[in-house]
Amino acid sequence: MLSFSNILQRIETEISLLQFNYPPKSLYDPIEYILSLGGKRIRPALTLMACNIYNNSIENAIKPALGLEVFHNFTLLHDDLMDEADKRRNKPTVHKVWNANTAILSGDAMLIAAYRLIGETESTHLKEILDLFTVTALEICGGQQYDMEFESRMDVTENEYIEMIRLKTAVLLACCLKTGAISGGAPENDAELLYQFGIHIGLAFQLQDDLLDVYGDTATFGKNIGGDILCNKKTFLLINALNNASEKQKETMKNWFAKTTFEPEEKIATFTSIYNDLNLKALTEAKVQYYYNEAMKCLEQLSISTDKLCVLKDVCDHLMNRQS
Image (cartoon, rainbow, N blue to C red):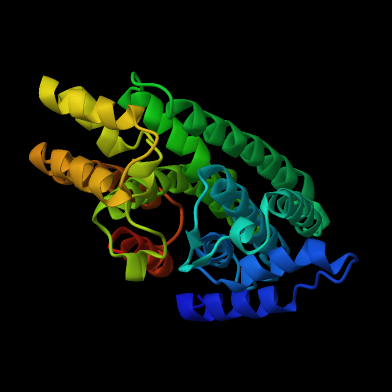
């Protein structure tokens, strides 16, 4: 089994070798820019790790892993534009460095580049992996649409929110794991168990992200703290705040929702205070732990020796204890 650090080194090497030399250069500069910002590379790493569990060689998984990472960054580029975000990984977002139109078109080119890379999967598993990716890409679009619609709704339920983050975040992690497993020749049942593992760990990951948006440190989080609050995003914390707040607290939140001009720091402080009063940090942490435990149950059912899962478990433990 390759170590996580060895897998990351391979990913960075392969990403550095990607070439976008087609004219016009101005279309591809933003793609090179967002890929150069780094990030955790968790998605391609999961792809290669899942492959390596079943196969000593990870070569069959390299191209789809790269395609999935390019696709992930495409979603970030468009998400930042829709959210009007200023920062990504502590650097200006693409639409801030260039403009909105460039971000849209370069993002479209990234999506096509992702398909091209995944299309280079070896022929034995090409249709299965391409079909999985296509379904996943459509699900992610659905998750993003739900996310936008929720901003103007006051009646979003916790179950609706969990379904939204399943589509927007978890299915891609699940896709990466199943893609790697298929590439490595895993039994069908194991590939599906790794998919379900990805769903659960993805839900835990996004709920952790909700927490970090409120309680994280800008220096390590890579994004401005409180961005979800400023955008009125219906996160796990906000939904539970609306469900459990006193009438006075509900009125306070509704008044802030209605404001179009305000001091960002004041709004963030107000909502954080309400979350603290309702003990929502602990509630969210408990939900994170629940999905993490469900993910571990999936790993326990795999038809492989537990020693092969050490790297995968270590990475997931790191994700769940991250500060960025």
